[in-house]
Length: 164
Image (cartoon, rainbow, N blue to C red; front, side, top):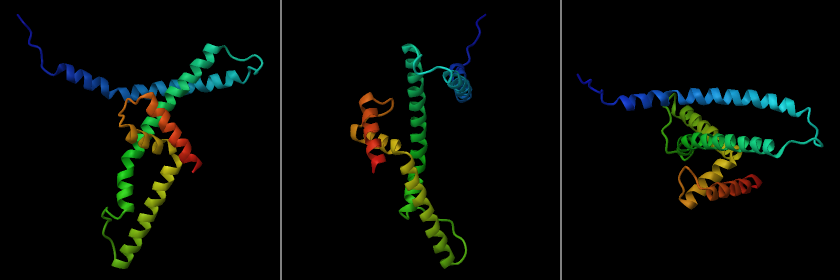
């Protein structure tokens, strides 16, 4: 007797695994935060004269860089997702909800546009890295995963944006 193999079982297994990735990442981040706080407290007891072994400092630096990269990537994606809606509303290309008299509606529309404009400027001001990353990716034509040269260029642009 031969058993029939159900088609698509591999895809179902992959989908189930993918569903748990976010929760697993959150659990790892929780563990990372817990250990980071404990290590921070441990390092309070070590003087600069005593110092740290090179490999210890290297591991901490690498972990910080890796977490920073993930944070900036997700933050960039989030800001990119919100930018078109905000820019369209600021430019007047997005329809606003209909309410009240024409004068009242125009006043609300202007207030809404101004609040969006302020949020857009605030987003750009708070995240020069996102601006730098967008410009660097556009100028190099690079797509994720990014080349190291693109990331360096993004940081250089971000520093210039910060300075104003």
